[in-house]
Image 1: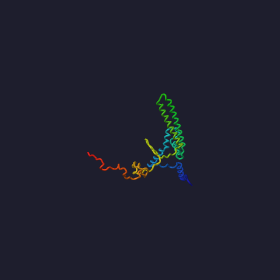
Image 2: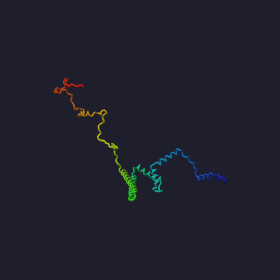
Image 3: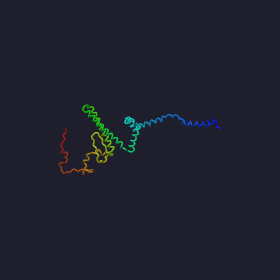
Image 4: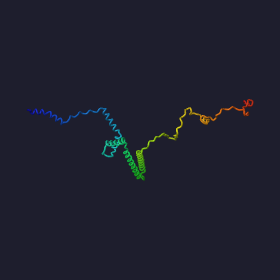
Length: 235
């Protein structure tokens, strides 16, 4: 017959097991510090992430606080990467077109705002009027450039293959006619131009005959003899 002592000895292992299960697993050992190589890899990954255009743009937009505390730099970065993916993979330019037309309208509104401020100061403060007019014309110029960019985006120019580009600061003459014959040898470059006058055509000379002998048809024109010559007076 089992006594109370025997029952307590038998129940002791079960009691310890239940306490261990309620207590949970023993905590792991303290994690070791990362090695220098792991720290370098982590710094490089962080630097590469910070240099991405979407990350830089997200941080810059977040500093403007356009939406207050409704968003943060991380959410803006993810939204920018989504727009970049649409352009790079699907070639979707609708967002870029929307951006340009909105910027053009904003610049147009700035132009009329500066014009109105200049009109209010035109009779009293000429310096302020001139400053507002300069800002208005600058906004107009940027609006025109934005619309030109949008037009090129909608209707890109056809590629043009330029045969020859001639750039000179002063007067320049360019002959783009039919290409002439090949350049002759250097020995022919210094050809005497007088020889060309003796030729009627290539390989034919104007004087086709040989030199003739003197005839006695006109004796008055014969060569004088020694006795008929005048004496040369010597000084």
